[in-house]
Length: 228
Image 1 (cartoon, rainbow, N blue to C red):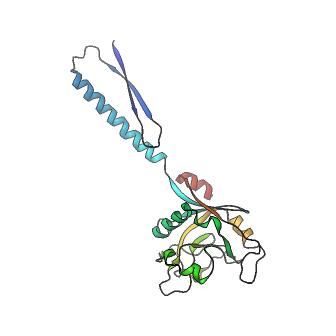
Image 2 (tube, rainbow, N blue to C red; image 1 turned 45 degrees about the vertical axis):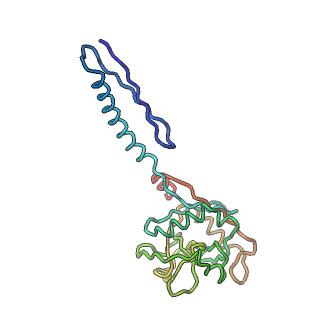
Image 3 (cartoon, one colour; image 1 turned 60 degrees about the vertical axis):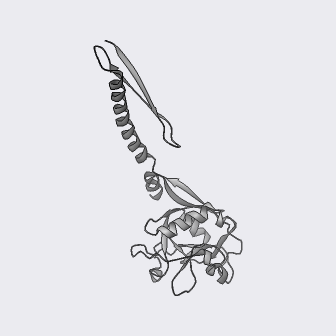
């Protein structure tokens, strides 16, 4: 028996190369070289198609907001049903926008709010205004993440401001008035500490709570494990 071993290697961008090998019995085969090449190409196509499907399934890449404070880490799942707010959060986080800012409004049984200054200027900068994205299923439950705003007729979000609901019973009176674009999957114990710090008459912490906000990536399975 005369066997010939064939090696086929294929690599995807930013992924490791995948090499396939198989044996072809060429004993007694009177096949033209072009036919042999065609056979090899067909087999290669089948292997690569299957491996690419596997690669896509096993390398899910879901962006998650990560907030680092001196009290610990907070992880935020961003909701696909509010695509503009999700994209905005990712854009500002990747730009390092919040890294010099703080949680500037913390109220027990209400919210921990951070981002751009809690002032008229902070809420009205046109560059940071965003049309609301109200989704009936996204409510102000414990751990919900929303976009702050001032009192404006269009209910435009100040996309540089975000808040996290800390009230265990939620804040249903805010539903349909403020956009919810995510929820905390890890770190509500951190929020519980933050809302209980000493603060001044405007509910700003006496000792600044600095933010470092980044985007990290997980698979669906990893997010499920973190959430539970």
